[in-house]
Image (cartoon, rainbow, N blue to C red; front, side):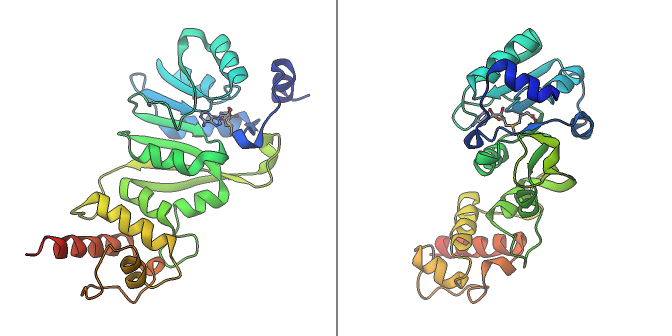
Length: 262
Ligand code: SAM
């Protein structure tokens, strides 16, 4: 029996899809993930969902300031017993609890909540992140404008970071085996490479247009009452998926300008 199979048996855990409980069984993949995170001893590291600690045991070798957030009681008990004071454990839902300050984020994300966790991550101050997600999700994070994978997620990620897919990880490297393959992505935080006058408006324009991605931008924005019927703006006859993040920023800056005009 594999190590993970043994741990599942020993702890009495019944892995749940709703909690994204697919455990990485391949140590070499975990080694590469942690190496790519470039952690220094003084770095504060945050891991969401340590599970049986395949990443955690590598993280505590690199840093003395590792915090883990684990939702599942059995797994939290396991982590607490195995790592003791080497890890600060927060028991709870990573979407609900306040995150501590951190420099580096390393996580094999529970796929059920990947989107809200990434958006929460993007609101924090951090240096870089190495994250395992479903392969399709990684493709959406790194998509080019004009493709069907290009989405609100792509724009949000690009706004805050330089994002790169590092490797794909076959489903056979997890227990229980998920239906789809995974991928490891790296995010390096940086200021947006374009100016945004009003961040809230930029994200509202982005979200509204991607929610109605088949509609013309003008129609989507008018229906949402973000612009009036007679607004003169660029891109209104286009669909959002052809606009680069820079062009979406240009549009939202022009809307901002119209609103401030006397
Ligand atoms: N890091 C381990 C590994 O690589 O094998 C486990 C990764 S597994 C994909 C996801 C982990 O996140 C599980 O331990 C699960 O219990 C935990 N989890 C699921 N939803 C969570 C949430 N909302 N907040 C915190 N942890 C969560």
